[in-house]
Image (cartoon, rainbow, N blue to C red; front, side, top):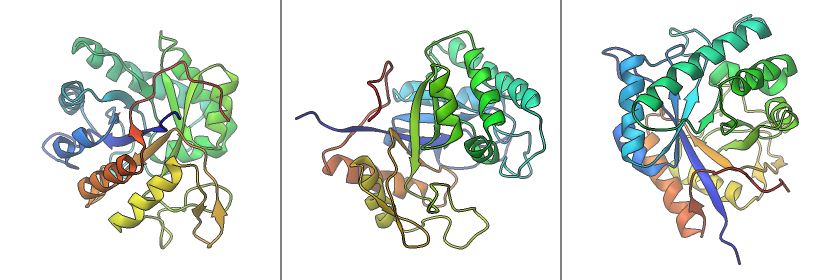
Amino acid sequence: MQTRAIDLNCDLGEGFGPWKMGEDQALMPLISSANIACGYHAGDPVVMRDTVKLALNHGVAIGAHPGYPDLQGFGRRNLPMSPDEVFAMVLYQIGALQAIVAAEGGVLHHVKPHGALYNQAARQRDLAEAIVKAVLHCGTTDLILYGLSGSFLVEVAEARGLQVCREAFCDRTYQSDGSLTPRNQSGATIEEVAEAAGRALQLARQQPLKTANSGQLLIPCDTICIHGDHANAVALARAVKESLEKGGIRVVAPTPPFPSKP
């Protein structure tokens, strides 16, 4: 019987200048892929390079994490940008990280939009098209796009021939339509480490999750996200990894080409 495998990704490199966010040094050994901020919602060239080096030292797959140009709002505010502006903005950010990764002797593995851009592209086809177009224009056919399971971003990417990782969240709650509970609503995030670890194992085993309104939702996924900016992110990541491995799930970054989705 083939052992089930799942990717465990984390948003890292989110400091800026002298301002630090997250415990990247402690988190990196616990994950299989890292989404590195590209200077718009967080990060700067030095932080990007340092985070790339850290990922390479730990054998962690490196992804670009482009977001809206919104340092004050940490990229979590919707901005009224046109699809053409989104295309150029995402292409710019991927290219910046791609150059740093190459300079350090690595290869960019994936792209995962951040925050409000991620959520808007999940439900707006024109923004999804713009992001997919940017990934396709990066000069390589090997990039994987991480997107919310069941979203327009995943649908558009697959239709355009991109390799896709369907993403789920063990530290966020879901609405019955498969969308994430907005952060301004009570109960949007899961702070209890044991609960998040249990949900991660359910996701990896493709078992239904309880939704915010007490329903049941099946979320097919290839990768599970841990948010690096949570206060208890290290404890959560450690508990999630232990839960997965004890449950017979291998934690490993995806390598294309993938088999057809069930």
